[in-house]
Image (cartoon, rainbow, N blue to C red; front, top):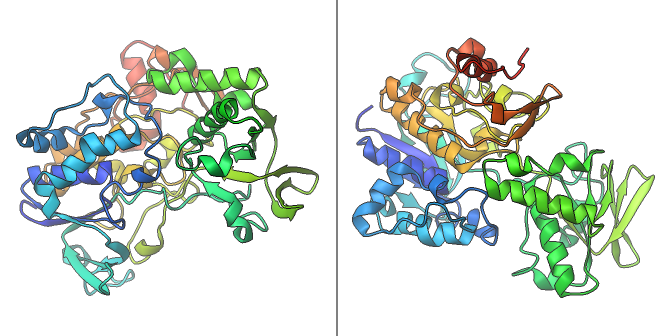
Length: 451
């Protein structure tokens, strides 16, 4: 397809990168963004510093699109906040390049199908264009496209507090005391948390960063207390790879957090699976199975996110039933199997579905898995757009080397990724899970232990 229309859902970093790639291929992108501006989700966490420096956060096709505007590339070794990513890269990309004509803001996609075909009808399906319905404040609109890349992310679909994947009993009734994700506890949301007892539920980087900020807030405002509610039994699992992490900022975050926990600056409640939330004497009682309860002023739920698949119900998706990621990608990112923060580069082959021309990419492609890196998304859409354009060789090519976490586990066994056992392209679809083994063995190194 050399001159077709590609609909891109979401104008975040990966969505804009996809649009830049589409333009370079001579096709026409149309970007549908639910928010009032590009990068709407990032604007919700713009106070957060990224783990990766600028060299990993700028897409190459996007940089080429920005070059004629006089754009100055930031210092590749410095670490931007979300706000700096917007101001110095995403806003110029969305407003000063030809992409400004392709982006439709305040346009929330409500459904996607094939023109004239429901999900059950097969014959002639591949030749039918996609029909995308969206709302833009003027009533329902309809767009037709030859291909669709859904990079709408997961930020606005946070996981609930309940340890069974459902909202805890009483959670919906007490949302005024609950925040999800990573609120700006020392900035925009300072008044809400200063001098309060605040519980943070979760074991990922969002929870860790929020707990560190609460300790800093306690240094500034006496009476602020941070409580870490951890579903698992081992706090050290959240500390990361430390010095072995090739993303230094990520390693430093884990090390700083470990020091605060060791110093007793954060109260830790392990094995705490939340089941109930209730009001007790003007405070919020957070209960685990009725046997344990913690009384707090505020609760921050940082238990990850999940994809919104509701508007894709008429498309033929091939998703892993547990992770809700594309079936070929899921074995590489399933947290039940391994904890690697680095996944080998992947593209159109792993992200394709039984609906030709439709792809999930970006954070949404990871389903419920937690370890997505922005540069992974850039490689995904480079490969996807090449595939849409019919350049199968470029689609199959790997053009990215990812930094490693230093420490990970696979199948319950701790591995040293510094030894070179993670990463590298799969040689054939049937061996996609064991691609790291293949790569390591070719370099005369030990394999990752896939069985």
